[in-house]
Image (cartoon, rainbow, N blue to C red):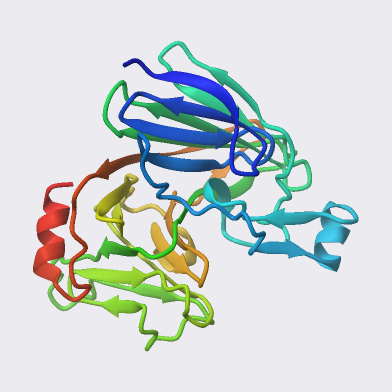
Length: 310
């Protein structure tokens, strides 16, 4: 069937747009965000986290002083657009208002929230679902609406549902006497965290509802690929890596974060300077592969076989 859309109310998130093709369904929030709050096979379980219990929120005096009294940022869940490098309160814009949407001639849906005048940026999220199957292209754009040049990168964050495991390939290039791999860890990341495994060819990170606290790691990933095993299927997320470009967080283009509520797969674009009125763009491709058994986190041969077919 062709791609169709319908305005719906979904899961306590208010007015949303459902986009479907008979094989796959996306739901994008219009009352807040935007968030791609649902991505699933037709009639299947959601790969994405839905924050129905308001588990993750930023508020307080710093937010009040910057955005106005009572301002708060809430994760809501699903897929969102941010810009890097992360900063408080800049990154935590309270995107709790209505989102405008439209559709281009090629079937690409466009979602535009309110401009962030405090931060001097304006977001645009574009979503294109294939006519059949589960392939999705997500294009994220950030415009400099300030009065001076601004250096930033697009940060594309997908909050995954509970109970899965992500896998991300590391670099394997033989560089002789020079180093070939580096990793960034955050202050709260314990290197002996049982959720995390550092292998020779892959890192894996499990989401565990009973775990204590968060964990995050970033790395250079020239394949641009990452994946999340959940409920016997596999979510795949890919974004191009640009060699010889500066990336945030000590050269990271791929990062993953988890806490007791969700796990995030994050791709990052390079840091670039944009003049007032100019735009930086970042593109991701998604797909769901059915019936992929989750391998042991230390079985790198099994992981390599799965990634060779992505």
